[in-house]
Image (cartoon, rainbow, N blue to C red; front, side, top):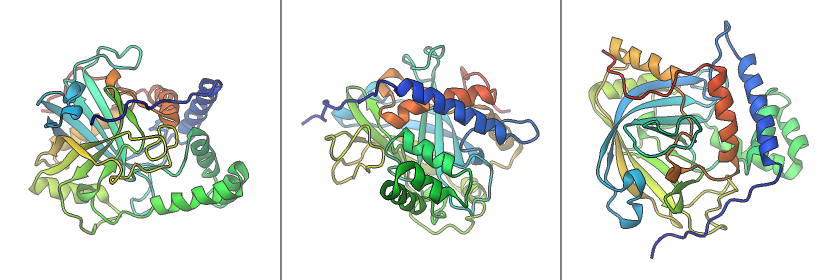
Length: 337
């Protein structure tokens, strides 16, 4: 039986106005956090590590053979591991952990105006399969409250009400725990839906490395760099299909899509080959990746982001990219010497 196709988005009449206002807020925050006049990303300001990679499409299930995953093919890629905070801080501190992938040589029309004919495709993921916030309004309330760590709980409760504010705070603290596994053994999830051809789906990067305890929680990038000098680091790119609005909602980002409701299906394998991020070539890769933009909306039109928070990101990411003067979208992967 093929996956369900009766998913739908629910878009409020005033959504565009609110999202434009939120994007302006993030742009102002981005400028406030600038050091020595240099503007960094609005969020995920600190990179743990950047590396070269290759994606090998292997989908062998009929319903998963969609778009760029319809046939076996290899794509070269660059990846960026990051902390979610708007300001660089010790890896020892609780934080969101991000994983961004830019593929090269991806044909098909892209979504962002002016970039429709580019041949890159971005995938962004975090280490939790859902987020504490149901929608962009709650996310913005959290960001505003976090501007003062001492008053954050009170501001959040004042903004969202006691029950919802307290519940969000509890989920947030649980999701921001210090990493217990190294980056190579950590799974990363879209946590938010996208289209997958006619279907709706979540995706995840599932590690091949066995679970283990990180020895360097205060320097996650160094630990991954040591592994990459010795052996490849491999992830399976998997998807979960939408089932129904109750168990796999499109608009409520706080609901985890459980694997026992919608099993993960492998569609590709992402390999970070043996490399030395500390070498001259590795440093050039890192410097180049920091100039790039990674945007969930820089995607083929059959991989379009879905849901309230994804739609808000369509406004915010554009402001962030322009604010820090990211380099133009590359047409090919540089050689790096």
